[in-house]
Image (cartoon, rainbow, N blue to C red):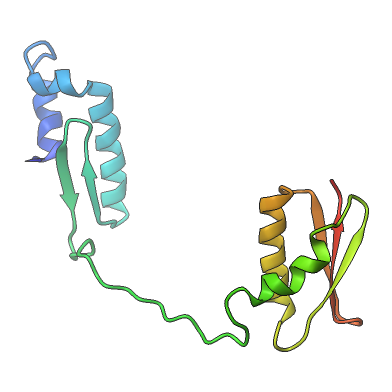
Length: 150
C-alpha cells in the first residue's frame, strides 16, 4: 500500500492537467476534493483518522496516537439469570399468540421486567416484525403484557 499525503496530491492535481497526471486518472478530481473536505473537517474537530482512498493511497492523521490497537475488554455484570433463561420463560406465553390476543408474562426479582421486556421485544421484532406488537408492564399484577397487532 502506498503512503501519501492527500493534501499534497490535491495540490499536484490542481497544478497538472488531468490528462498528464496519472493519479488524477485513477481518482477523479471531484473525489479528491470530497476527500479533502472530509479530512479537513475531521482535522478541524480534532479527530484521529486513517483513510485508504480508492487508489489505495493511505492518509493518516493521529496527533495523540489514538488509532493504536488497544485491548479493550468490558466485563459483563453478573446477572441473576443464566443465558437463555429469559427466552425459555417468555416463549411458551407468546409462541401461539394470534392477532388481537394479549399474553401476560409474569416476572419476579430473578427475572426483572426491563430485561424480560427487552429480550421479548427483540425476539418479537425478529419473528413478527417491527410494529406488529406492543408491550406494557403491569406492576400491579407483576406481568409483562404483549398485544399482537399484526
